[in-house]
Image 1 (tube, rainbow, N blue to C red):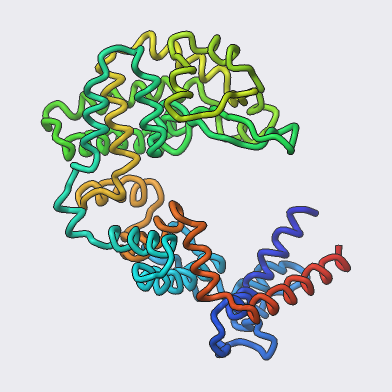
Image 2: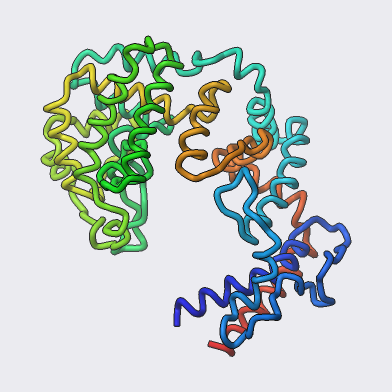
Length: 400
Protein backbone atom coordinates (compact mmCIF):
# COMPACT_ATOMS: atom_id res chain seq x y z
CA UNK A 1 0.00 0.00 0.00
CA UNK A 2 2.88 2.40 0.82
CA UNK A 3 4.38 1.81 -2.63
CA UNK A 4 1.02 2.42 -4.34
CA UNK A 5 0.46 5.62 -2.36
CA UNK A 6 3.96 6.81 -3.23
CA UNK A 7 3.37 6.28 -6.95
CA UNK A 8 0.01 8.05 -6.63
CA UNK A 9 1.69 11.09 -5.08
CA UNK A 10 4.42 11.08 -7.75
CA UNK A 11 1.76 10.86 -10.43
CA UNK A 12 -0.05 13.81 -8.87
CA UNK A 13 3.10 15.94 -9.25
CA UNK A 14 3.08 15.35 -13.03
CA UNK A 15 -0.05 17.40 -13.45
CA UNK A 16 -0.16 19.56 -10.29
CA UNK A 17 3.37 20.96 -9.89
CA UNK A 18 2.81 23.75 -12.43
CA UNK A 19 0.00 25.02 -10.21
CA UNK A 20 2.27 24.93 -7.14
CA UNK A 21 5.00 26.76 -9.03
CA UNK A 22 2.61 29.48 -10.08
CA UNK A 23 1.46 30.01 -6.51
CA UNK A 24 5.03 30.18 -5.22
CA UNK A 25 6.23 32.74 -7.76
CA UNK A 26 6.30 36.48 -7.13
CA UNK A 27 3.09 38.47 -7.37
CA UNK A 28 3.18 38.30 -11.18
CA UNK A 29 -0.09 37.30 -12.89
CA UNK A 30 -0.39 33.60 -13.62
CA UNK A 31 -0.22 32.87 -17.36
CA UNK A 32 -1.64 29.39 -18.09
CA UNK A 33 0.76 27.11 -19.94
CA UNK A 34 -0.24 25.31 -23.11
CA UNK A 35 -2.29 22.27 -22.23
CA UNK A 36 -3.35 23.62 -18.83
CA UNK A 37 -6.93 23.35 -17.65
CA UNK A 38 -8.86 26.05 -15.85
CA UNK A 39 -7.81 24.39 -12.58
CA UNK A 40 -4.13 24.79 -13.41
CA UNK A 41 -3.53 21.09 -14.03
CA UNK A 42 -1.54 20.32 -17.19
CA UNK A 43 -3.71 18.05 -19.28
CA UNK A 44 -0.98 17.37 -21.84
CA UNK A 45 1.01 15.62 -19.07
CA UNK A 46 -1.61 12.88 -19.19
CA UNK A 47 -1.65 9.86 -21.48
CA UNK A 48 -5.37 9.17 -21.90
CA UNK A 49 -4.65 6.18 -24.13
CA UNK A 50 -3.71 4.26 -20.95
CA UNK A 51 -6.43 2.89 -18.69
CA UNK A 52 -6.15 4.81 -15.42
CA UNK A 53 -7.42 1.81 -13.48
CA UNK A 54 -4.67 -0.40 -14.92
CA UNK A 55 -1.66 1.94 -14.70
CA UNK A 56 -2.45 5.27 -13.10
CA UNK A 57 1.17 6.41 -13.17
CA UNK A 58 1.42 6.09 -16.96
CA UNK A 59 -2.03 7.64 -17.31
CA UNK A 60 -1.03 10.67 -15.20
CA UNK A 61 2.60 11.07 -16.35
CA UNK A 62 2.85 9.40 -19.74
CA UNK A 63 2.37 12.57 -21.75
CA UNK A 64 5.00 14.41 -19.77
CA UNK A 65 7.48 11.51 -19.98
CA UNK A 66 7.10 11.31 -23.76
CA UNK A 67 7.76 15.02 -24.20
CA UNK A 68 10.67 15.53 -21.80
CA UNK A 69 14.05 14.01 -22.54
CA UNK A 70 16.75 14.23 -19.85
CA UNK A 71 18.79 17.41 -20.50
CA UNK A 72 22.43 16.87 -21.45
CA UNK A 73 23.65 18.60 -18.29
CA UNK A 74 21.54 16.53 -15.88
CA UNK A 75 21.73 12.89 -14.70
CA UNK A 76 17.96 12.74 -14.19
CA UNK A 77 14.89 14.85 -14.89
CA UNK A 78 11.48 15.10 -13.26
CA UNK A 79 8.84 17.63 -12.38
CA UNK A 80 10.63 18.62 -9.19
CA UNK A 81 13.83 19.20 -11.20
CA UNK A 82 11.80 21.39 -13.55
CA UNK A 83 10.53 23.36 -10.56
CA UNK A 84 14.10 23.69 -9.26
CA UNK A 85 15.20 25.15 -12.60
CA UNK A 86 12.53 27.81 -12.26
CA UNK A 87 13.75 28.57 -8.76
CA UNK A 88 17.30 28.90 -10.05
CA UNK A 89 16.16 31.72 -12.32
CA UNK A 90 14.68 33.54 -9.33
CA UNK A 91 17.77 32.88 -7.20
CA UNK A 92 20.02 34.17 -9.97
CA UNK A 93 18.10 37.44 -10.03
CA UNK A 94 18.31 37.66 -6.24
CA UNK A 95 22.05 37.02 -6.18
CA UNK A 96 22.92 39.41 -8.98
CA UNK A 97 21.25 42.19 -7.01
CA UNK A 98 22.49 41.06 -3.59
CA UNK A 99 25.98 42.60 -3.58
CA UNK A 100 24.36 46.03 -3.23
CA UNK A 101 22.11 44.82 -0.43
CA UNK A 102 21.71 46.89 2.69
CA UNK A 103 22.27 44.16 5.27
CA UNK A 104 25.39 42.07 5.82
CA UNK A 105 23.73 38.72 5.07
CA UNK A 106 22.51 39.91 1.67
CA UNK A 107 25.90 41.39 0.77
CA UNK A 108 27.57 38.13 1.84
CA UNK A 109 25.56 35.99 -0.58
CA UNK A 110 26.07 38.58 -3.32
CA UNK A 111 29.82 38.65 -2.80
CA UNK A 112 29.99 34.85 -2.68
CA UNK A 113 28.12 34.59 -5.98
CA UNK A 114 30.20 37.29 -7.65
CA UNK A 115 33.42 35.56 -6.56
CA UNK A 116 32.20 32.26 -7.94
CA UNK A 117 31.26 33.86 -11.25
CA UNK A 118 34.68 35.51 -11.67
CA UNK A 119 36.16 32.57 -13.58
CA UNK A 120 39.09 34.63 -14.87
CA UNK A 121 40.27 35.39 -11.34
CA UNK A 122 39.79 31.77 -10.31
CA UNK A 123 41.89 30.60 -13.25
CA UNK A 124 44.65 33.09 -12.45
CA UNK A 125 44.94 31.74 -8.93
CA UNK A 126 45.12 28.10 -10.00
CA UNK A 127 45.98 25.89 -7.04
CA UNK A 128 47.16 28.70 -4.77
CA UNK A 129 43.98 28.75 -2.61
CA UNK A 130 45.01 25.30 -1.32
CA UNK A 131 48.65 26.23 -0.63
CA UNK A 132 48.28 26.59 3.18
CA UNK A 133 46.61 23.19 3.50
CA UNK A 134 49.05 21.51 1.12
CA UNK A 135 51.92 22.88 3.21
CA UNK A 136 50.32 21.57 6.41
CA UNK A 137 50.03 18.11 4.86
CA UNK A 138 53.62 18.19 3.63
CA UNK A 139 54.80 19.23 7.11
CA UNK A 140 53.24 16.18 8.82
CA UNK A 141 56.29 14.57 10.42
CA UNK A 142 54.69 11.95 12.69
CA UNK A 143 51.30 10.35 13.17
CA UNK A 144 51.06 12.10 16.52
CA UNK A 145 50.18 15.30 14.65
CA UNK A 146 47.52 13.67 12.46
CA UNK A 147 44.53 14.49 14.76
CA UNK A 148 45.16 18.24 14.53
CA UNK A 149 45.77 18.04 10.78
CA UNK A 150 42.59 16.05 10.17
CA UNK A 151 40.61 18.46 12.34
CA UNK A 152 41.76 21.34 10.16
CA UNK A 153 40.83 19.49 6.99
CA UNK A 154 37.42 18.46 8.33
CA UNK A 155 36.66 22.05 9.26
CA UNK A 156 36.96 23.02 5.58
CA UNK A 157 34.91 20.09 4.28
CA UNK A 158 37.70 17.61 3.47
CA UNK A 159 36.42 14.48 5.21
CA UNK A 160 39.47 12.26 4.91
CA UNK A 161 39.34 8.90 6.75
CA UNK A 162 36.00 9.57 8.49
CA UNK A 163 33.24 12.08 9.05
CA UNK A 164 32.43 13.94 12.27
CA UNK A 165 29.42 16.03 13.21
CA UNK A 166 26.32 16.31 15.38
CA UNK A 167 23.01 14.52 15.04
CA UNK A 168 19.92 13.74 17.05
CA UNK A 169 20.22 10.70 19.28
CA UNK A 170 18.35 7.93 17.46
CA UNK A 171 16.75 6.81 20.73
CA UNK A 172 16.22 10.16 22.43
CA UNK A 173 14.82 12.87 20.18
CA UNK A 174 15.45 15.52 22.84
CA UNK A 175 19.24 15.03 22.65
CA UNK A 176 21.78 16.09 20.06
CA UNK A 177 24.99 14.11 20.22
CA UNK A 178 28.31 13.78 18.41
CA UNK A 179 28.55 11.25 15.59
CA UNK A 180 31.56 9.73 13.83
CA UNK A 181 31.00 7.79 10.63
CA UNK A 182 32.89 5.90 7.98
CA UNK A 183 34.25 8.01 5.15
CA UNK A 184 37.34 9.04 3.29
CA UNK A 185 36.56 7.18 0.05
CA UNK A 186 36.44 9.02 -3.26
CA UNK A 187 34.04 6.61 -4.96
CA UNK A 188 30.33 6.86 -4.08
CA UNK A 189 30.20 3.87 -1.71
CA UNK A 190 32.18 0.82 -0.62
CA UNK A 191 30.74 -1.54 -3.24
CA UNK A 192 32.43 0.42 -6.02
CA UNK A 193 35.75 -0.83 -4.60
CA UNK A 194 34.73 -4.45 -4.10
CA UNK A 195 32.33 -5.58 -6.81
CA UNK A 196 33.95 -7.67 -9.55
CA UNK A 197 31.56 -7.08 -12.47
CA UNK A 198 32.90 -5.48 -15.64
CA UNK A 199 31.28 -2.10 -15.01
CA UNK A 200 32.80 -1.81 -11.51
CA UNK A 201 36.23 -2.92 -12.72
CA UNK A 202 36.11 -0.32 -15.50
CA UNK A 203 35.09 2.43 -13.07
CA UNK A 204 37.99 1.58 -10.73
CA UNK A 205 40.44 1.74 -13.64
CA UNK A 206 39.09 5.13 -14.68
CA UNK A 207 39.09 6.34 -11.07
CA UNK A 208 42.79 5.58 -10.67
CA UNK A 209 43.49 7.37 -13.96
CA UNK A 210 41.46 10.33 -12.71
CA UNK A 211 43.47 10.52 -9.48
CA UNK A 212 46.70 10.43 -11.52
CA UNK A 213 45.54 13.28 -13.76
CA UNK A 214 44.52 15.37 -10.75
CA UNK A 215 47.86 14.82 -9.05
CA UNK A 216 49.61 15.80 -12.28
CA UNK A 217 47.56 19.00 -12.51
CA UNK A 218 48.63 19.71 -8.94
CA UNK A 219 52.32 19.54 -9.91
CA UNK A 220 53.33 15.90 -9.55
CA UNK A 221 55.59 14.65 -12.38
CA UNK A 222 53.48 12.69 -14.85
CA UNK A 223 55.79 9.67 -14.60
CA UNK A 224 55.12 9.39 -10.85
CA UNK A 225 51.37 9.98 -10.88
CA UNK A 226 50.12 6.47 -11.85
CA UNK A 227 51.98 4.78 -8.99
CA UNK A 228 50.83 7.47 -6.58
CA UNK A 229 47.23 7.02 -7.71
CA UNK A 230 47.50 3.25 -7.20
CA UNK A 231 48.73 3.89 -3.66
CA UNK A 232 45.69 6.05 -2.92
CA UNK A 233 43.43 3.37 -4.35
CA UNK A 234 44.96 0.68 -2.13
CA UNK A 235 44.42 2.78 0.98
CA UNK A 236 40.83 3.63 0.09
CA UNK A 237 40.11 -0.01 -0.73
CA UNK A 238 41.38 -1.00 2.72
CA UNK A 239 38.88 1.43 4.25
CA UNK A 240 36.11 0.14 1.97
CA UNK A 241 36.60 -3.47 3.07
CA UNK A 242 35.80 -2.46 6.65
CA UNK A 243 32.85 -0.23 5.74
CA UNK A 244 29.17 -1.14 5.82
CA UNK A 245 27.41 -1.36 2.50
CA UNK A 246 24.60 1.00 1.59
CA UNK A 247 21.87 -1.54 2.42
CA UNK A 248 23.19 -2.23 5.92
CA UNK A 249 23.43 1.50 6.60
CA UNK A 250 19.69 1.89 5.99
CA UNK A 251 19.05 -0.09 9.17
CA UNK A 252 19.20 2.36 12.12
CA UNK A 253 20.24 -0.42 14.49
CA UNK A 254 23.32 -1.11 12.36
CA UNK A 255 24.59 2.45 12.64
CA UNK A 256 23.80 3.21 16.28
CA UNK A 257 26.55 2.46 18.79
CA UNK A 258 26.51 5.00 21.58
CA UNK A 259 29.86 5.15 23.37
CA UNK A 260 31.80 7.25 25.81
CA UNK A 261 34.87 9.10 24.68
CA UNK A 262 37.01 6.50 26.41
CA UNK A 263 35.30 3.68 24.52
CA UNK A 264 35.88 5.47 21.23
CA UNK A 265 39.53 5.97 22.12
CA UNK A 266 39.87 2.25 22.82
CA UNK A 267 38.79 1.50 19.25
CA UNK A 268 41.56 3.65 17.77
CA UNK A 269 44.54 3.58 20.10
CA UNK A 270 46.82 5.26 17.54
CA UNK A 271 44.58 8.29 17.05
CA UNK A 272 44.23 10.81 19.87
CA UNK A 273 40.58 11.84 19.89
CA UNK A 274 41.07 14.47 22.57
CA UNK A 275 43.44 16.38 20.29
CA UNK A 276 41.11 15.97 17.33
CA UNK A 277 38.10 17.24 19.29
CA UNK A 278 40.04 20.28 20.45
CA UNK A 279 40.98 20.89 16.82
CA UNK A 280 37.35 20.96 15.67
CA UNK A 281 36.34 23.03 18.73
CA UNK A 282 33.88 20.39 19.89
CA UNK A 283 32.25 20.89 23.30
CA UNK A 284 32.71 18.21 26.00
CA UNK A 285 31.05 15.03 24.79
CA UNK A 286 28.49 13.24 26.95
CA UNK A 287 28.40 10.47 24.36
CA UNK A 288 29.16 9.77 20.73
CA UNK A 289 27.46 7.58 18.16
CA UNK A 290 30.18 5.52 16.49
CA UNK A 291 28.17 4.40 13.49
CA UNK A 292 30.53 1.62 12.34
CA UNK A 293 32.89 0.41 15.13
CA UNK A 294 34.60 -2.14 12.86
CA UNK A 295 35.45 0.62 10.42
CA UNK A 296 37.23 2.58 13.14
CA UNK A 297 39.15 -0.51 14.21
CA UNK A 298 40.29 -0.84 10.61
CA UNK A 299 41.17 2.86 10.55
CA UNK A 300 43.45 2.27 13.53
CA UNK A 301 45.10 -0.71 11.82
CA UNK A 302 45.51 1.33 8.63
CA UNK A 303 47.40 4.00 10.54
CA UNK A 304 49.67 1.32 11.99
CA UNK A 305 50.39 -0.40 8.67
CA UNK A 306 50.64 2.51 6.22
CA UNK A 307 53.85 4.48 5.59
CA UNK A 308 53.56 8.14 6.59
CA UNK A 309 54.32 9.28 3.04
CA UNK A 310 51.38 7.23 1.75
CA UNK A 311 49.07 8.83 4.31
CA UNK A 312 50.27 12.28 3.26
CA UNK A 313 49.68 11.38 -0.40
CA UNK A 314 46.15 10.22 0.44
CA UNK A 315 45.46 13.46 2.34
CA UNK A 316 46.76 15.52 -0.59
CA UNK A 317 44.40 13.66 -2.91
CA UNK A 318 41.44 14.12 -0.56
CA UNK A 319 42.13 17.86 -0.43
CA UNK A 320 42.21 18.09 -4.23
CA UNK A 321 39.11 15.92 -4.58
CA UNK A 322 37.03 17.97 -2.14
CA UNK A 323 37.88 21.29 -3.81
CA UNK A 324 38.36 20.48 -7.51
CA UNK A 325 34.91 21.67 -8.59
CA UNK A 326 35.63 25.23 -7.38
CA UNK A 327 39.25 25.44 -8.53
CA UNK A 328 40.52 26.62 -11.92
CA UNK A 329 39.07 25.23 -15.14
CA UNK A 330 41.49 22.28 -15.62
CA UNK A 331 40.65 20.91 -12.15
CA UNK A 332 36.91 21.57 -12.49
CA UNK A 333 36.79 19.97 -15.95
CA UNK A 334 38.68 16.87 -14.79
CA UNK A 335 36.37 16.54 -11.78
CA UNK A 336 33.33 16.82 -14.06
CA UNK A 337 34.72 14.31 -16.53
CA UNK A 338 34.94 11.53 -13.96
CA UNK A 339 32.19 12.25 -11.44
CA UNK A 340 29.53 13.43 -13.91
CA UNK A 341 30.44 12.05 -17.33
CA UNK A 342 31.85 8.66 -16.29
CA UNK A 343 29.75 7.88 -13.22
CA UNK A 344 26.44 9.51 -14.18
CA UNK A 345 26.47 9.72 -17.97
CA UNK A 346 26.12 13.52 -18.02
CA UNK A 347 27.64 14.90 -21.21
CA UNK A 348 27.68 18.64 -20.57
CA UNK A 349 28.70 20.95 -17.73
CA UNK A 350 25.89 22.99 -16.27
CA UNK A 351 26.16 26.74 -17.02
CA UNK A 352 28.46 28.41 -14.54
CA UNK A 353 25.72 30.63 -13.13
CA UNK A 354 23.64 27.59 -12.18
CA UNK A 355 26.60 25.96 -10.47
CA UNK A 356 27.31 29.16 -8.55
CA UNK A 357 23.68 29.46 -7.47
CA UNK A 358 23.85 25.88 -6.21
CA UNK A 359 27.08 26.52 -4.29
CA UNK A 360 25.61 29.60 -2.56
CA UNK A 361 22.50 27.61 -1.69
CA UNK A 362 24.64 24.83 -0.20
CA UNK A 363 27.02 27.02 1.80
CA UNK A 364 24.83 30.02 2.69
CA UNK A 365 21.37 28.54 2.33
CA UNK A 366 19.76 30.30 5.29
CA UNK A 367 20.76 33.76 4.08
CA UNK A 368 19.82 32.96 0.49
CA UNK A 369 16.49 31.53 1.62
CA UNK A 370 15.59 34.76 3.38
CA UNK A 371 16.37 36.78 0.26
CA UNK A 372 14.39 34.33 -1.89
CA UNK A 373 11.31 34.62 0.32
CA UNK A 374 11.45 38.41 0.21
CA UNK A 375 11.65 38.37 -3.57
CA UNK A 376 9.42 35.51 -4.61
CA UNK A 377 7.04 34.50 -1.86
CA UNK A 378 4.88 37.38 -0.76
CA UNK A 379 1.93 37.24 1.68
CA UNK A 380 -0.67 36.35 -0.97
CA UNK A 381 1.47 33.53 -2.39
CA UNK A 382 1.90 32.15 1.12
CA UNK A 383 -1.83 32.25 1.77
CA UNK A 384 -2.58 30.57 -1.56
CA UNK A 385 0.01 27.84 -0.93
CA UNK A 386 -1.27 27.12 2.58
CA UNK A 387 -4.82 26.87 1.23
CA UNK A 388 -3.73 24.44 -1.49
CA UNK A 389 -1.71 22.26 0.91
CA UNK A 390 -4.59 22.18 3.36
CA UNK A 391 -7.00 21.04 0.65
CA UNK A 392 -4.59 18.33 -0.52
CA UNK A 393 -4.21 17.04 3.06
CA UNK A 394 -7.95 17.03 3.58
CA UNK A 395 -8.48 15.08 0.34
CA UNK A 396 -5.81 12.55 1.27
CA UNK A 397 -7.30 12.09 4.74
CA UNK A 398 -10.63 11.17 3.20
CA UNK A 399 -9.01 8.81 0.68
CA UNK A 400 -6.67 7.06 3.10
